[in-house]
Length: 204
Image (cartoon, rainbow, N blue to C red; front, side, top):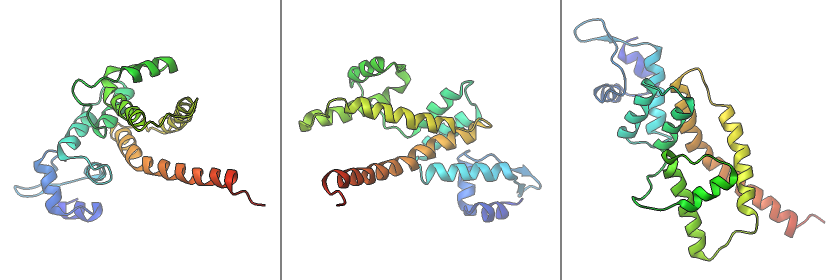
């Protein structure tokens, strides 16, 4: 297909497609003349992934380039590939920040402690520090309950990870994280309302 058809089918303006080509996010088409190229469905799929990463996922062009580089040259392990997607949307931990408390919790839970994932560990440490600073201790056993429920959710999500292509796997992880987290928070609030009604405002 010509670039005009690629734009029409993808919903991405020609100028934006050309920008992605210049930034080497989108592979060049097959030259059919000195000024024209032909594109195929692989370009359409790539465009959809790029738009998802810069749109719902909110990644910068530099972040998108890093993710796509791993898609094009995936590590042998699917687990490592999924880490690329998660890393792209996790804020970086402050240099020198300590989160050994989180590592101790992970060891107690029987979870692996991988130093490559420390940005995520730092997010939990920041949340725990926020609770400490506010003088708001969690009810006894609450953190363990949260951990068990999160494990169950994670098992469902990881079971759904596509294994047919690196592109599909990264898209699933990045968009699944960005788009599903608000859903989980909304469901949590709705469940709280229902639990509150059952406890404090039961139907007579």
